Image (tube, rainbow, N blue to C red; front, top):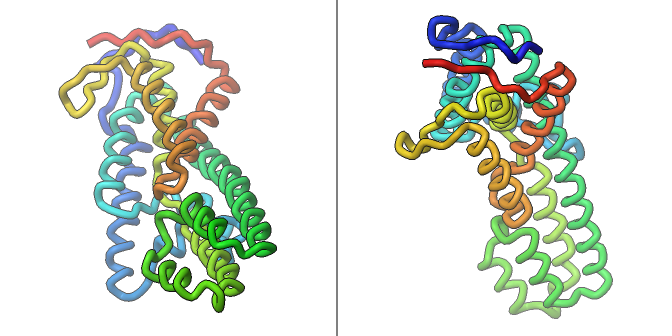
Length: 273
């Protein structure tokens, strides 16, 4: 990978073909999600990536999940970041290499998140198994608070606690049902690939200023470090917040590995205005 060329406004397109078509395809998928939802068909459930142990898992979801988004803001932020950091990379690498990078980082993000999910789900299952041997009320509450705080119904739990002596054996099934709910939640979004692109942008153009919220200028490499640190700590300390933080880190990790394979030598491109 040649890192010595000068790179300026006259030598690139603001909407190179791969970035442009990815934007279009993602918008089409989002609109299709709305149209099909009005007809009772949940495309997010069908095309989002399920955990392999889920009965809803299909192999094609490793690709399709990247084009599904849960809300307009989810779509907008991902697509804006894809364009903002992606168009320069595509102009440097060319369409083919950029497209390969996009899909490999997106796939790597999903694999990394699924690996983390495997560890998490295994630990939850072990905790439920241990609890089933004691049926201790405090252990039941502890499992709920640690693993299922965002999904259990407090009213139903309070009812169980009031009738504990008669329903304690049934609480094991309740915990297993909550675990099944977690396993069956699909992962969606282009964020993993976008974070890979962010990392590549920060390494190749480390000194280019990026304006956070259009106001505060931050060097690109500093932005990468900030986002990487945030995603790590959020993934560790808020693992059940509904955001696949480790998918974001996985996209960055696979992006870094791929750049090493391609021979990147950590010499920034010289960008002029």
